[in-house]
Length: 269
Ligand code: C2E
Ligand code: MG
Ligand code: MG
Ligand code: MG
Image 1 (tube, protein in one colour):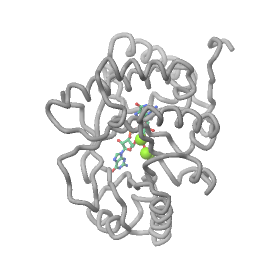
Image 2 (cartoon, rainbow, N blue to C red):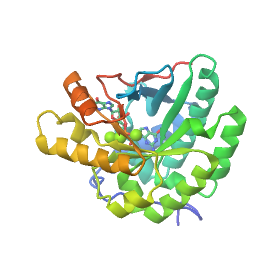
Image 3 (cartoon, rainbow, N blue to C red):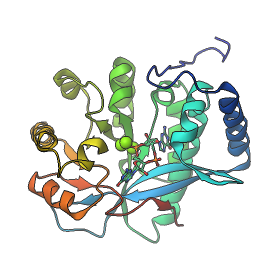
């Protein structure tokens, strides 16, 4: 309640609670300043078709970074504090608006097909998010069909009803959805059946050990078959070598992402 009315603060029990509070408070101060002074920045990492011939149409995921005097900081180091202290919504909004602006600029240079944007359940649940999204789309004249929101399996399951309701509303506008980090949580057949997502992104921990672990291969294959039978496409994250690529092709995975295919790099304009 202290954060104001009409908002949902979602706690993530798997995040360490022993986090040194003052470190988090330092991070919150840094982030607040960064949001004010424009010190957040976006990187992009390519998502590449594995089965069909590579096309000229580009597909990316955008990943947020924080500029500090000590260099760039990855989201793993600041999103937990942002979440705990109610800054995720502002960060996600900044990322969404910046992505729209970039799509509008980049459209003249490259034919970007889809940009994946990570989104938190806090943001989906915000009652003003829909209005914000519509305004960004119209400000930058961007088609929602070019944007795919990524929501983690963990968030989707833990806030299922809420997430489902907002996915349905945003889909009506034309946005696409991907279920991120799939396999790291406890999604059931029922979740898979009811979540209207276009893509399933298999968590990197299954992909990184694909060559060494026969069980991982069976799991990845089975998830892919189920996804395809449900009319969804599959993206493998964390592809780090060519051997993994060969296995993924053999398993009929649609898209790949990872250091081997392209590291995250600063957005060009
Ligand atoms: P994610 O959405 O699963 O993003 C993939 C992460 O894996 C990225 O880390 C990426 O740099 C990393 N990665 C890519 N290829 C490889 C690889 O071959 N090997 C390995 N080991 N890692 C690889 P990053 O950028 O540090 O992002 C971490 C997480 O932070 C993301 O995981 C996502 O959940 C979250 N995140 C990033 N940007 C945003 C954002 O704008 N909003 C929200 N809400 N969350 C974000
Ligand atoms: Mg993601
Ligand atoms: Mg992921
Ligand atoms: Mg991941």
